[in-house]
Image (tube, rainbow, N blue to C red; front, top):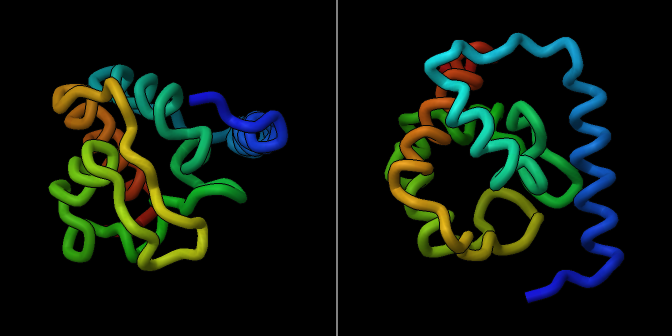
Length: 121
C-alpha cells in the first residue's frame, strides 16, 4: 500500500523534527540498542524518536501508557492486530506487517526503559 505524498511528507517532517528536538536525549544502554533501532525504524514515524509522539501518533511517555494501564500485552496486540483509537484523536492504529514477537519484545523493553527515564513509573 502506498501512502499519499502529503502523508509521507508529513511523516518525514514529523520524524525529522522529533530527531532534531531529541538531539540531547540520553542514549539507551547497549542491551536495548536493538529495541531502539527497531523502534526508530518501525514506530518512530508515528510515535516519534524517543517515543515523544508526533502530529500523527501519540507519545508513549504519557502516564496513560504506564504498565498498570497498558500492560506489555497491549504493546504486542496493537501492532499485531491494529487497535481502534480510544485515548487520543489520532485515528485507529493499523496492523504493522512484518514485525515479529521477538522484535516487539525488544521494542517494548526499549519503550519501558524510556518511560522509566521519564518518570512514568
